[in-house]
Structures are given as C-alpha cells and as structure tokens.
Amino acid sequence: MKALNKNTQAILDRLIAIAKAGGGHTKIDNAPGHFMAACVEIIGKVDGHNDLVSVAHYGEQNGDAMRDPDIVFEVSEIHAWPISYRNDYMGINNEAVEYDENGMFHGCRRKMQADITDCANMLLRNIAAQQGI
Image (cartoon, rainbow, N blue to C red):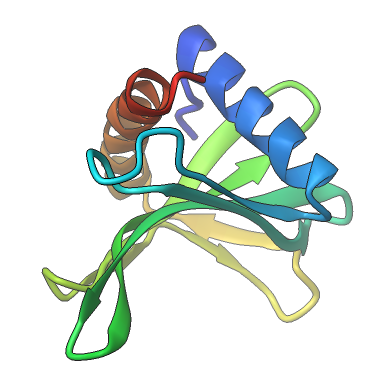
C-alpha cells in the first residue's frame, strides 16, 4: 500500500497527538469563518495494534452533517496509509482496504488506495496551512 509522504506524515502525527490529548478526538478551528474546521478522531484498531484515525471536514445540508471529505487512515508507529475516502455532497464512499470480522487485513484495491493517498497528502497540507498546524 502507498503511505503518506514524509511531510504529510508529520502533519498527521501532530493531528493525532492533539486528538489523543483531547481524549481521542478534537476539532481544530483556528480560522473560524474562513476555513472549515478539521475534525480528528481515533475510531478504533485493526491488525491487532494499528489505530484507525478519521480526519474530516464537516458541512451541513438540510440539517444533516455532511463529510467533505472524511479520510480514514490506518496508522502504525512508523507509517500511515489512507484506506477510505468519503464525500457526502458528492455521494462518494470509496473503501480501498478490507478487514475481516476480527479486524485483520483481508485485501486492498491498490489503485484506489494510491488515489486516496494522493488526496490525503493534499488535504493534510491544506489543513496545516489553513489551521496553522
């Protein structure tokens, strides 16, 4: 699987540290009214030890929370791999990696996962610039 590049890995590591300090989740809004807040949440574990981390922007449509986008990462001590991308406004829900019922790796759609990684690299750079991370 394709991992984040070195620079965006550092950004994600910082976001995860902020989320852990906040009890496993946080909302970062250092530019209210200018950019969408970044929401970071540790949502579980896979493969027995790697964290699943969601990084998302949320908007609202007809009173419903809308992900714009939400990227989920599998995070080890060394690397992070984006594994899913969701954008509710566009009706997109791409899950590139599959796990069995015990949370163990089952398979990967490599081209989709590489595309999600490219998008995640851009999203994390934008969050860092917009939120002063």
